[in-house]
Length: 556
Image (tube, rainbow, N blue to C red):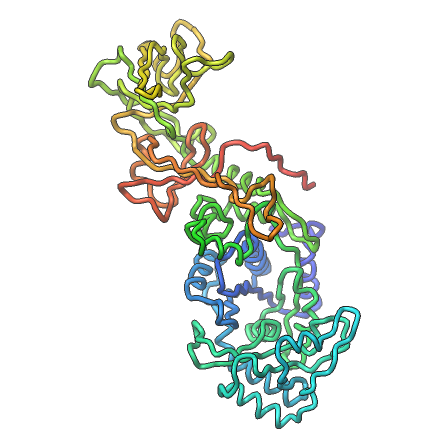
């Protein structure tokens, strides 16, 4: 169903105008990551925007690896990006491309520019080129090599290709305008020498195109109609247009810029994440404390929650920051009707019901999700010995504490009323065992005589509960102190990960597989860790707590 015109974002309005005026017949978009790291939540916006526009206008969506810089690129990153894009639901079908597949055509385009006197080989070093470029208020100086003949430039460029020069010894520059107010147009470097092995082409090339030269050519070759990128490329658009014009491509692509997605108090910069990984502060690019797409998937976020988050953020040309709590809101909203609720005890203390028959157990029926009856029910075994959470018992409670303490009666969730009679401590004064009696007439958590209890606590059966490891995550950044220290280092939260080794969970999770998720009663939503969990040792990651003070902004 088409949305009303007034509700369309500015990119949709541009596309519809281009279609109606015949500037393009069929929409083609692309997501062009450089394979030099893992994708993060900001990339998700670009992936979903580009693939969504292609789908909306019945067009094509390309996944293209912008692999023109072999110094940082790895096959590992290529595979992780493919997995992320696929997981998010952006289907590229058979339209998977690599910029490196076009190296020959890029080289021929550079030769064409030399023949048109639009490019020349320079002997200046990188430092000298920066010096010659001038400043925002002063024009640049002409490169001493700019007057070389076409023949000499062709020979030198061929020699660059043949490996006759060392890295940095010569570059190819576009000849545009050293007095341009746009620094990007002051004879930018479009090819450099780099004796590096490429992940896709091996050692075939020792010269590589620069991004600003390669990217528009890639778009043009693939028939991309709308090259949608983030705002930092706005000043590069004149160069983008210059390249496709001077390369004489018919129906050149149109570059459109939109605002990046910024999340408060999170680390998205590849440089910082790489440092966290290399220094083993996190256990990889997919550590659940990060906001890489792989990390969010491992933590238990769903594609639908990220799609909803991106939709709520919207598309604009103004940079702004979004509270991380909004991402948490989206995952809670997605999971609350999908997931079964189970009881889990994270800090166990044993409860013995002295008047319950020894050796006897019974099966209690428990509703999987109170808000979604379609998820059905499961059974949990009830017997003489149970585990409850240590925080649900106090030896000397304060006023208005309604959970378990000596002499108090509480409700065991879905089971019976029990009264605490006594407890046992170890030599260190720690309570190790609680003794109770139960009311057999209160099965289901209701008393036939109408008496009320104010406290309800969850529990698991001691004889068959699943022992598991549970990991509680907090922001890896110290939110109160900010993301960065004065020296530019990351301000890390020392309590970003809490590992609980001795947790007990209802037996219904014993066959849980990687990425399966549940709501743990009173604790939050948890997901089976895909990396460390095994059949004999389940590991659960807390996706998100149950409640937040976050309020969804009014977008009307």
